[in-house]
Length: 76
Image (cartoon, rainbow, N blue to C red):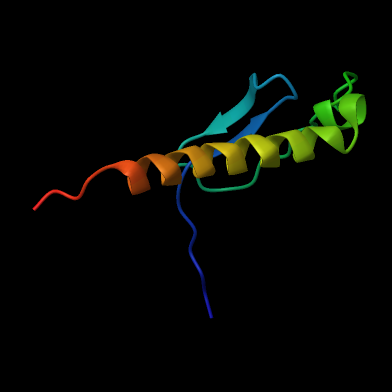
């Protein structure tokens, strides 16, 4: 079974800067060294509070949107 993949391939560093960008017309392989970030991630800085805060914001936003829909009179 032969599978052909096509598309753009890219590599970025920890700050989002492009290290390599190969268009869909390129055929072959490229190898790039991606340096590790020396900066701590939000999870390392804040621990479990980062995903808990994100989930709380998501749930609160969903609750507000649901409450606004329930209060709005139906249009016919």
